[in-house]
Structures are given as structure tokens and as C-alpha cells.
Length: 113
Length: 112
Image (cartoon, rainbow over all chains, first blue to last red; front, side):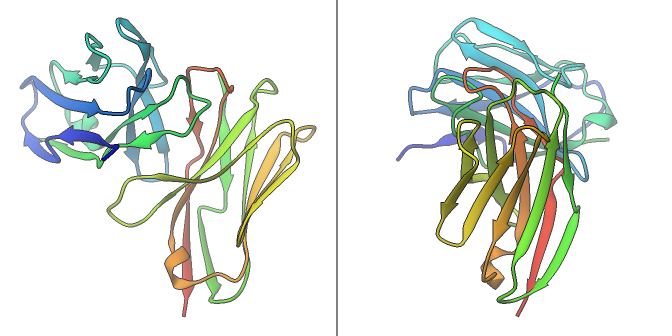
């Protein structure tokens, strides 16, 4: 089954404790992206990757890191989480660019206390 | 960069009525405009999209119109049903671009 998976689905953590949210797709997509969803603000792009070893900042990259060492995986790293990073996070992938259908993962609800 | 504004933020209609959601974008170079539907607790899913070489696209009860000159596009849902209740997001980007910019979302409620 073609899909995008994320783990964990729910996470409660404390300020400053490094965490990683994993994202994996099995559709051989070149393009992958991370979004955060906050009420009234829609989905805002954090980082994206056009292909392996090619990553770049989105609209809200502060406090986040990513890596793309394999085509299927695109982890999101919060090295020192803060309460303003409490949000719902979605990973997405598409064939080759932002101009194709984005397939979203199930989401990760993160709470930073 | 691109900026997308979406209105209204909430919309309540009676079952069977039509619903219209409007979006404006700022970057005249944008040429791909998708619409995503997010049901409660679920992930966003593409329901329809339009490229700038056409002015209108239909798929059963949903349609999207695009006015490139005015830089706005709209989602039209006819004969609404309770299962249409969800949050709808518009977005804009370049077909071969790298950034997808979303509007703030519209919560549609269809009353039976």
C-alpha cells in the first residue's frame, strides 16, 4: 500500500529535550516536506527536500533541522524544543516538486511543556 | 514569497445548499492551485486542483475557478452533504516549484 508514515503519532516532552520525528514514504517520491498546523494559520512549510541530500528552508524553519540521506526517509529534528513548537506536524511527499499532489502522513501531535 | 489568503474562515450551510470558498494569492508566477480537504482528526487529502492554463475544472459536485488577472481562485461545492463537513485548504505554487503556500483554512459545516 502506497503511504507516508510518521512516528511517533503523539509526543509530550519538556523544553530542551532533543527529539526526532521520523517520516518515511514507499512511493519513490523525490519531493518531501514538513508542515506544522496551527489553528487559524493553516499549514506552514518548515523544510522541504527536492531529492537526496538536497534540503532547504520553508517559511518557518527556526528551531528545526532535517536530513535526507535516503530517498524514503525525511526526519524532523528539534534539538532544543520550546513551548512555541507545540503543534500538529505533517510530513508529505510528492512525485517531484510542490506542483504535484502532496501525500500527507497521519500527523504527529507534539506538546512541549 | 507567496502569500495566500482564504475566506471565510468558517462557513455553515444547510444540506443541499451550495458552498463557496475564496482564495487570493500574491505571486503572479504561481501556476498550480490545489485544494485539500481535512476531516476531523485526519490528514489533508487533495480533492481537486487547477493549473493556470485553464479557467475552470469540475469533478462531480466540486469545481474550482481561477481568475489569473485578479489573482484569485474559488472552490464551489454544490448539493452539499453532511460528509462534506471538514476543513478546506487552498494553496498556491509553481508546477516545478519547491514551496507550497497554504491559506488559513475554512471550516465548512453542513447541517442536516
